[in-house]
Amino acid sequence: MKLNTDGLIIREHQTVEDDRLVTLLTRDYGVIRAFVRGAKRAKSRFQSSTQLFSYAKFSIYRGKDAYSIDEAQPIKIFFGLRNDIQKLSLAQYFCELAGELAPVEAEADEYLRLMLNSLYMLSDGKKEPEQLKAIVELRLLCLSGYMPDLTACADCGNDEDNMLFSPVEGRIFCPDCAHDHTGIILPPGVLAAMRHICFSDDGKLFSFALSKESLLFLSDITERYLLIQTEKKYKTLDFYKAMKG
Image (tube, rainbow, N blue to C red; front, side, top):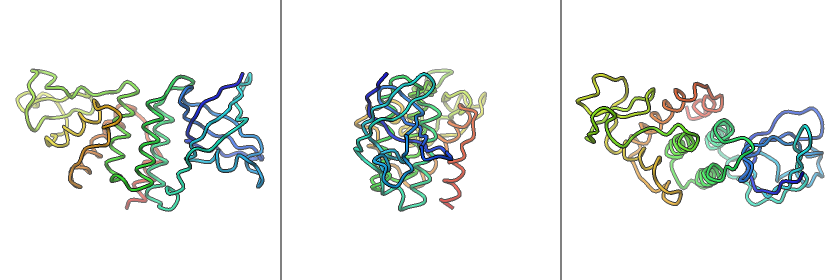
C-alpha cells in the first residue's frame, strides 16, 4: 500500500547497515517509523531529504511489518539549526516532544504546522528561544488532550490578578481560593500569554511579547506542567539546558 504525504524527519535511529531508519511526523498519518533503503551510501538520492529536520514530500510503502520510503522530494531543510548548538538542542527537544505527543498513524496537520513554524522561527532567529519553547510545550499539550483550564478560578469563577496555577490540577485559582491549593502565582502577563498559546488561532500563535524575565518565567511554568502531566523525563531537555549553560 502506497502512502503519499508531506512530513518532517523528527528522529534518526542508529542502524548497522546502509539503510537509515527514521521517525517522521506526517500531515496525514501522524508519527511513522520508516526505513530508507541505502540512504547512508554516499551517492544515495535520499541523503538530504531523509536527515533530521528535513521537511519533504514522501511516497511511503506500507508493508506487512514495516514502512519504507520510496521517494522523497525536499521542501525545506533547516540547515540553520546545525550552526548553533543551543538552537540544535532545542530543536531536538521539540522533535522528541512531537514524537511523544503527536498521534501515531492518524491525521496530525496541526502538530506538523506547529513544528514547521517553530523550527522556522528558531532557525531564523524570529523569536526568542524561551518563547518558542513555551509555545511548543503548551500548544502540544493542548493538542494532545492536556489543555489546562485557564478561563477563571476553578473554585469560585472569579478572574483576578495574581492567580495561582496548579501544574498538578491544570487549573487556576484566585487569591481567595488559592490557600486550598498548591501551585505558582502567575503575573498577569504570563497568564495572558498562557491563555494566548492555548486559545489563539494558528496564524496568531506566535504574536505576543513579554520581557526576558517574563519569558523565562513562562518557559519554566510550561515545562513544569509538561513534566508533571506527561510523567516523563526528556533527555533532549537536559541536553538543551546543559548547552544553554
